[in-house]
Length: 82
Image (cartoon, rainbow, N blue to C red):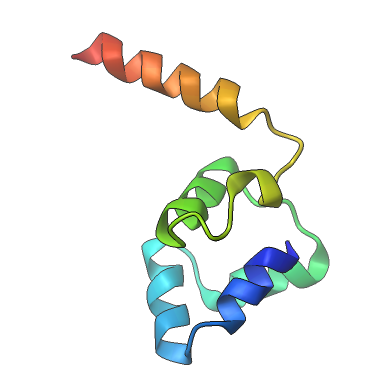
């Protein structure tokens, strides 16, 4: 989770707020979660990965999840909908 803290610290206050908004959360929640060692939800991890342009990877936030399995499952579900 230190990668998330470093990423947030690299942004100015407005950029942090914009980033958190795009992730459907708040800067306060993200900082509190990091400080408390809280496990972030899978969807939030995906938002963070996406909106940080891969600078903060899902795998670094939740190494307990097999992300390749989850993402392959989602891809198959989307392909079936088309």
